[in-house]
Amino acid sequence: MKCPDCVGMENKVIDSRLNKEGTVIRRRRECLSCFARFTTHEKLERSLPLLIKKDGRREEFDRDKIIEGVKKACQKRPVSIKNIEDLVDRVEQYVQELGEKEVSTVKVGEKVISEICNLDDVAYVRFASVYRSFKDVNEFMIELKEVLKSKEK
Image (cartoon, rainbow, N blue to C red; front, side, top):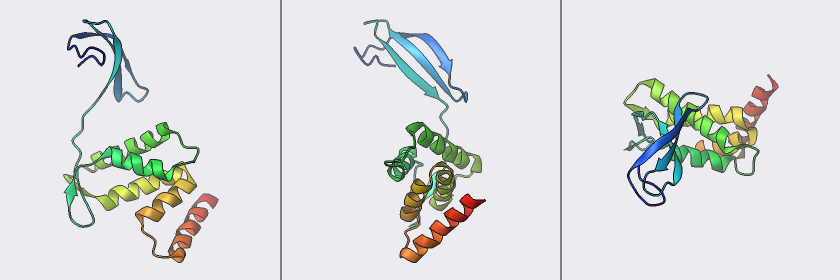
């Protein structure tokens, strides 16, 4: 691990802590050359399946793409980045638990929609309007009515 200050390669771990879920280890390190302190995060690396796009192309699962899409939907909404990251963690876990080598982006998109629905209604409608590519206002209104119906229960 390179020191961010002097780029030295020798450092020692001063402190290690697990996050609440036990999925990430936070390590405080000290550079043995310049004595600067910095933090690293250690996370289990999972092999995620390839995603099959609607046009048949295959690409790697990209967590950052999902985060950016959800962030756009949540723009100017009272949703924290922590909530967005937790949502993407659940989507990533879902994809991992499918146990398949390739997964349709439709499955991933529907999981994101189901998760975002529990997060924020406005963000849900924004995300769904882009993801589902409504052709007209009537399709949009049908989706809104479904949201309202589910919230009444």
